[in-house]
Length: 493
Image (cartoon, rainbow, N blue to C red; front, side, top):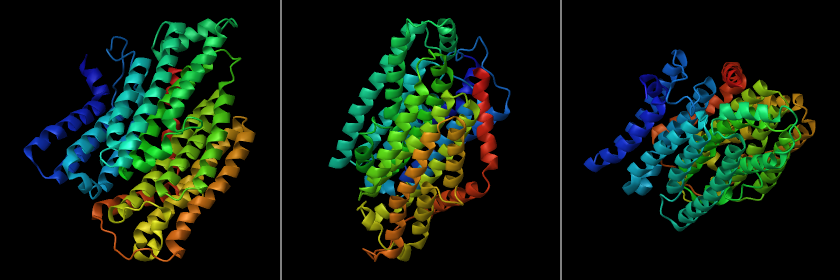
């Protein structure tokens, strides 16, 4: 392994080193607040390493040890940045939350960093074995984090997550094995070449196994992104897990999964037999996901369960862009997916981290527990309201621009019916998002106890709320970044 190789994976190595170091430092009985500072410092250094990579002349050469397993491109850097920044905001907002399990604080920070490193590897994996290992490195720490509170509900959610994550990983692995059997390689670039040569003469002999491969891979990733009908774990895991872990799971892991799905949808699926309409399959899953997600969210009384079904609905929206890739609208589809994912991350983090402050004082996670919050804690209520308005898709927020951009690309890709379904679902979603605002501002306060929170968590949610509005007014700089990232994967294609 050369110095060049180390520079390429330096952000991941930095986070892994800091994650392991926290466990060692905790042996010396240091203040728990120091562990938070060290964790955030490691993430900031990793961000600086990504910036250095972006403006350096680092390349992956043919003799590189990493040549067949990691892609070094702007798309990977963009998604790694989303993941790291999500982790930073979760840690900033968790300073009060970690006091509830003071004995396991070092494990909390270490597991988040290790899971973050797995997500980063997943974002740039160009080899199917590394992709699978990255999913495991991402998932196993999250399973442990779900149970870190050591309550009956958190233990149940962790066990459900473990079982269903194992099943989905096995299904995905079987799809990878069949793809290897068909092509003789696990390198995504070589798979693209082999499939092109295999099916260029209209070969129909391998169509059945190709259908099975697509089915297994879509099923495996369907679990990871919470798409219907593979979403059954999401509400229970979201409800039972500590809310900071729910926030991290709903944003960072989804970004990593979609980064990997983009590469597979761009480089592998289009080179399978043209008789397989994989884009239509994705479009159907998209429509069902957003519909079931939104209608189910209406029925929820728990805020975390409501947001879990909201996550399922937004997985459906994001799949519109994946379907667009199948129609040849590749650059715009990847760009709009990336932009919407950035906006979704801001909106979800703001919602979850704001409610986390409420739960630090009031353990009831029902929507009714937010009654009168606009009078008792106007700042926190305002941040929650901004996130709800943005998730609905109202201007002038990033949610509005993201949906406008996403629906335009879907329409240009020829999925008019899917955009019509998405528009109807956006109207339906307004009911349960605006219900939260109604409860906060028009209901009588259920409790008069003042919310206890440090300055740092409040700063984090205010800053996120500011970004939601800023990117709704001035989206062009981020859109240009996402376009550049999308074009970088087309060079590989």
